[in-house]
Length: 328
Image (tube, rainbow, N blue to C red):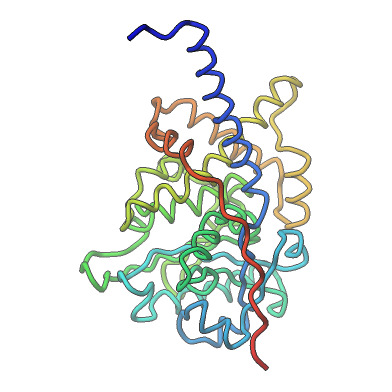
């Protein structure tokens, strides 16, 4: 057949770029809205549980709190727990992680001076619906917002044994997990590292401080992380795309205005609402992230096959109606 004309190729390229631009805009909007409510557990209820429990059981008991907007969390103190699962069927079969989480929650409250009554906890098993695939998908694609809403981000990585594989689980294995990298990256890109803790035992929970270069390189390479189901890679394409696009938009704005690197007024306002701390320190962290992305090989940070997959993803489903109130 005849070769396509230069004009037809230009039209195709324009359409591709138009589709890609719409996808990026949708991704950016996605990291600023809650497609699924942010589901939290009061700290006191968390400390009374004795073990990690599923979302559905806690909802039936009326233990969970549902927030439809990040601004509803402005006067709360949200502690986000990031951890790896220690078996294929349940995250914490022996209760090791729960005990470390409970101890680290008390430590964070003591370090920050927060009132326990005003502290609420996000942890995946309780905060993400487990039995409804559509609701679970909506909650997962909103992970960037959940991480950004957190006033404290706690890595829970005690040294123990995976119940099914027999492999050692610790800080190093945590850092290899795709989901753990994703959660860290979403928090770092919004809040920096000044609100991060790492807990490895019931007695050892310390502020993470600045990420060293090796840690930062592994966090940025989210899609090189290990997963149990390879379909999980696609579920985080849009949130990560949105965060990267937002970061580059800030950089382009800085260049256009020829001003020192700083985050957007909206991000600064959000930081003030969430009591994040030094906006200058956060800006420094984001500059390090940009430098690392620039220095990486093409396709190393965001693999081309996933960029193509992102263009083929359907638009996200509309948010479901709020769950019914628990029975009296």
